[in-house]
Length: 439
Image (cartoon, rainbow, N blue to C red; front, top):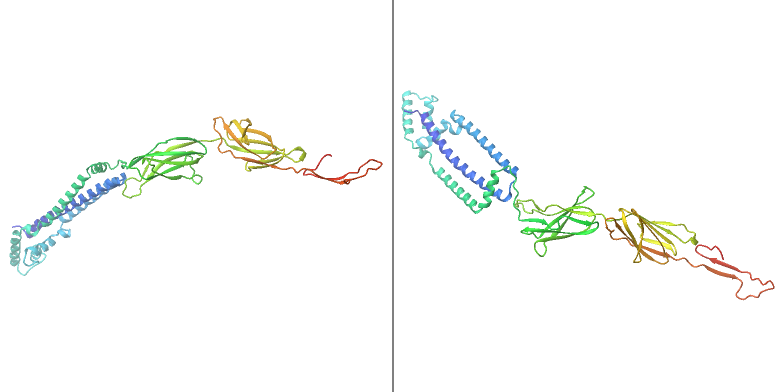
């Protein structure tokens, strides 16, 4: 006949099997749930390689820890040190369900293990035999009903059905997600609802000109996009990135934007950042294109020399380009000298609409003219590339009137009688801006 300890070991083994089955179904259901969540998250967000690889490492780490924990539990059970499966605990639980008195089995087990003694050994033997006989007739299915296992089977079946339905309705995306999960170290680009393509591409313009850039959206066109202009020689603190909004044109395909007064080289692109957290892409951007600016010839140094008429006795005056108003006395000579930033092939001084050819030498140009009225002139340069300067500054020459001399005759009076000497004394006063030299 088996001992009480042997029966309890057998019952403990049955309890472990039941718990393993329940735990297994729970883990299976949890795994299905996590699998479905991971699949749907990958469908929506296109997880990065870091997240996917870290997830696999985390799962592997959890499995290793779980295996170590199971091993430790197994050793403790074998040595009867794991409290839920200690024979004394099994005896108490079994006694509650299988014996009229719930402490019968635990008392018999303790007597058998010589942990408790009655007055008569014969009575102890009879008590142990009766308890053992009762244990041999126990139906373990009554002790461990299977309804909990069946419940978890049903839960797992429902979870499995939901998983299959979710995959079936999102088959194309789910298969792609599974493939991406199977390659955790490979970076996959998320699909984008549209693509931005530059139609104007790389542009060459003259300094100061306006530029119109055009982009096309292929796919679901948004109402507007941002267009960014970034100086090629970008310096933090000195340059700034220009971002403008361009709206969808009437043809529902193109975005046009005029960028005015371009004086330096730029890189430009169209882009649209993500506005919703569930969108798998952070930004949709076109390629970078360039705007190359050809410098126009410009005046680096400008000097106007004003030489008054010699009778005034005034010295020549000079004036820089930052003064567009030039004042000079009637008959003054205006001498214009300039230096350009480019080698010149032609320089013209347009005087009151009439073109005057300036003499040039390398980057230098010169021209002189005399003024006898208010005049206006501007300077037009052409370099060796055939490029002209932009928006020439108009200079205004204003005449300063030279007041006519005033003479007052004090003597003789209007009517005079000549004497024998036939002489007339004359006394007069003369006034003039610049004096007089002879009379």
